[in-house]
Length: 120
Image (cartoon, rainbow, N blue to C red; front, side, top):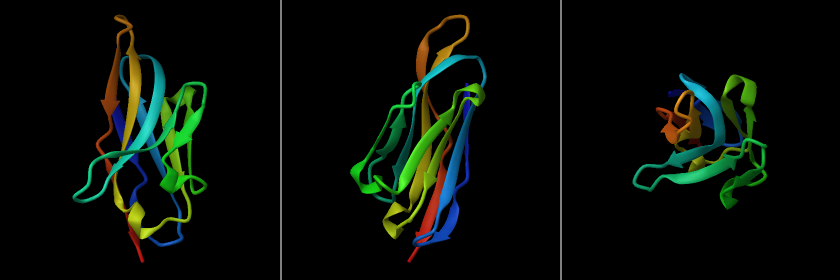
């Protein structure tokens, strides 16, 4: 199973970006998916989380600005980021709890990370 993240870049404060993360491989089903971020010198933190049924939760600092969504048919999760602030600058990682075909074992997988830089 591989997760491929895309959509990062450089944006001015107040701008928007949309991140995407597509999973591929021996996938029977994907349960929870999420986006995490890690700023320089800081620990990785959960930004947003979405269940298979599309229940969501967000870290307080992004509530009202970021929206997580998913397309189960395409094994893809999105993060729409609006009203970006310099403190949102980080490498963003996607994560997925994947049930494998055949074994039906669940494991957690990570994307490679995509850099978001917000200039003031």
